[in-house]
Length: 336
Ligand code: BGC
Image 1 (cartoon, rainbow, N blue to C red):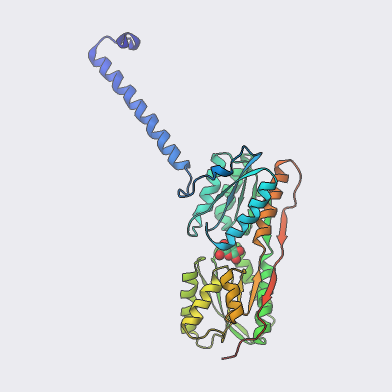
Image 2 (image 1 turned 90 degrees about the horizontal axis):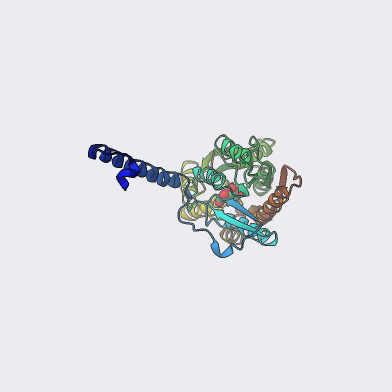
């Protein structure tokens, strides 16, 4: 019957046909497997939160910079609150350690599986604009959060006015040091626009003070360990360094580690970013003197609300800047 089906009479011909069919099946299986792998979740240790799935109206993808980073956890808290209120299934994905390629791959994945909308940090504009544009071209709106990608076709940005926040930090350091400081800057990353804007705002603000000098700017790559290492190197290289500015959430705790290691805690003025519990504890103990506090919960909450508005056809403003305020330690640091 099989022979009849193939319509082949000779044994050799039959073997060749069977071999070709087998090859075809193998090729199909391999391409299905590799196609699946290529578009499989780029972050493989995070299962879908199926408990939260109840056939909601929209499926949104929220991309973070680092899964367990307390700053991103707060963005998630705000986003979850808004998602629940708006009948949205929220899929949070982030690498376990900061990896600039991960959000890019996640945007591609979200586009492939056709979520209804994507919320992502913009990070490196060169790298992110094309993938954001591809998602938007495929009909999936993208909102940037925390870090913008203004050259892309993102619908809107929700986050801190980073340049202004950098100026705020500089004003605090001027106040703390009486306008005379030799400063080390520890910044999250050098290629990320939000940190570059914070540093630029800082530099522009101190420009008016001839005795405020920046000795070095180093990247922590968003790691507390690296922040401590870079701060430590600066303390060794510049014995007259008397001030630090940390631009990302883990830089403050890293700077504190370095100051403690060098026995300089409380003797160097420190302005840090974000009110993580450890940063606030260091403010209480006087190792950090001021914190620029962002509003991550509001960023998360507002971005989901904007996405829902977009998906229901309402217009949204492109720039949505959340406020920052300064948290201060009462005492001025002792001078060297
Ligand atoms: C920044 C985030 C960053 C976080 C890292 C925050 O200050 O706004 O972009 O991911 O620090 O710890």
